[in-house]
Amino acid sequence: MKISAKSTEDLGVFLRHLGILLREIADSVTIDLYADSDVEEPAAKKKFEEYKARVKATTEPPRPGFWGRLTGTKDPFMGVPLDLSTDEGIEIFSLLAPRVIGCEAYKDGKVIFSVIENENIVWLDIASQEAARLVDEARRDGASTLSLAEK
Image (cartoon, rainbow, N blue to C red):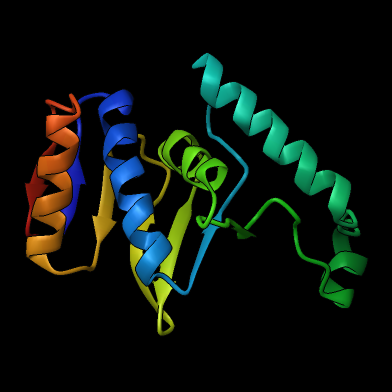
């Protein structure tokens, strides 16, 4: 199903609630630390820069070109594991997922959440009742522009 919002802020409110659910049900969450346009909102920009610096400090840079492909070195900023068991992980998720080129959550090898290069739409594969509950909670927290579509 599709959840959309007319503002990134409203989508962020929804993603805070979704992050708490994913903390309980997802086997893994990954985020791509690239954005098609500059991350400008101050809190999101700060988290984006901090998280990217943390990843850079803890991973070996990929080898460029042919040698990188030959040795299987992956881009350290693609498919970065995101730990939602902490409040910081939920904050990173809610601030960055709608602003980067990709973020996914998996359960039993199946994608249950995805946002790809779009600030205002997320795709979910969870029970309709659960999605409706999350939308209602986010609306109560001020996310007035959310809509849910079964398709």
